[in-house]
Amino acid sequence: MRRPFIAGNWKMNLDRAAAVDLATAIVARAGEFAAVDVAVCPPSVYLEAVAGAIGKVTVGLGAQNMYHEAKGAFTGELSAGMLLDLGCQFVILGHSERRHILGETDEDVNRKVHAALAAGLTPIVCVGETLDEREAGDTTTVISRQFDGSLAGLSDEQAAGIVIAYEPVWAIGTGKVATPDQAEEVHLDLRKMLTGRYNEATAEAVRIQYGGSVKPDNASELLAQANVDGALVGGASLKADDFLAIVAAAAGSQTPV
Ligand code: PEP
Image (cartoon, rainbow, N blue to C red):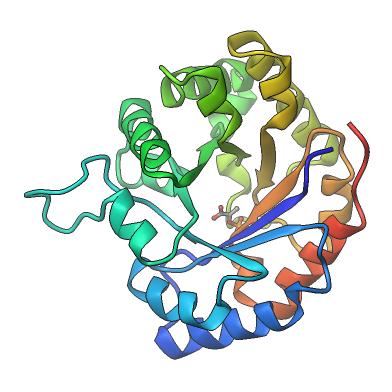
């Protein structure tokens, strides 16, 4: 059985004090949901402060991006080693805002995935189609292309150590959530891709999160789907009560695989 994994993507929000307050409020109650893995992904400048607030017990720490090189003349970038040094276990890679606003390609994401794994970070690799792509019937083609491009060259063992987040672009920050059936259809496709490109054991091990307007009132239905193993939460992760309600929904959603 895969442990549910709920991660909060705080994006470019909050200030230092608010980030510490939010982390403190989450860590105070996360221990009530021992069956769920929980992580927060603050802006990189607040990673160290948030690491101090959460300690090392119940809540994991993730970054929202990194660069693939280990060090050198890359002004403004952060390496996987630096994120580890700040206490991160996770890094979100290929988020749709980075793909669509900042021009990241599958090749960029792939280099970062390799560098993260080599350094010992768990990448949360995001894939997702735009509304135009969905309406043109291209969802599977797009997801498959992002999957193959972002994960190129991974061994079975490396692939087993990643997390995938299916985040339809049209559902991110829009309030339009995928229906549980729409989410499950793509998650099942992703599971089949994992089986086909790697093997059954890898496919069974990898957790696939859904992301896109997950809120306390829609989380249970989404998380009840057999191949939805958690959520990557944006807006609702900025309020401790909402985020914890989603964690609670995940605690109540475990289905044997
Ligand atoms: C996200 O940023 O990954 C996300 C899913 O955002 P939201 O929950 O706000 O749609």
